[in-house]
Length: 238
Image (tube, rainbow, N blue to C red; front, side, top):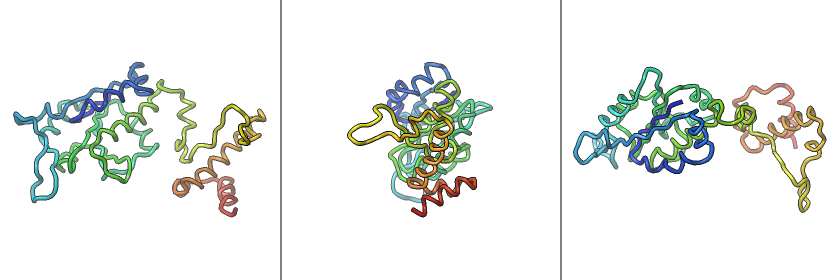
């Protein structure tokens, strides 16, 4: 996967791209990340990329020409352009799986009061990371890249991806490690039983319980089996 980032603050990505899973993905050549300074596409000697909005209003808008030129210079036949914006649908794991199938992404980092609306005619996906406002699009872009890097084959174990929270629409079951007991806090006996079928049943049950207690809204979006409905019902009745 090739990812081109259009930003006015490319220096923000230096540490991010040289750390952890993203660094591994780049070193394994599973993803390639290129940074592009939007000001390089400015049409004036001061390299400005913002201006006041027509009709008046507070703040500045990112202008259309430099963004148009940047996108068009990078776009290929198989490219998808993503604008990180609070007006888009909120990113979820299902969207991430779909986006990870693309060979080439252009990620646009917004700033100020946003972008000239004509930019949206060049965009394939407008995506938000939550119902709040940030100073710019660089942090959302980092989050999206981190989410996608984990899903690119060969970056992490496939089993880890399959068992992640939200992969099947539920939160992950509780997990424990050594020691077995510490100051009265114990690991559930079933996990020490060696009985894989019972452990699997316990994990499925606890995944449902955890989701109901922490994110009940997720259950409303999922088609539960009769067995799963009974588990949720038993929790509700407690």
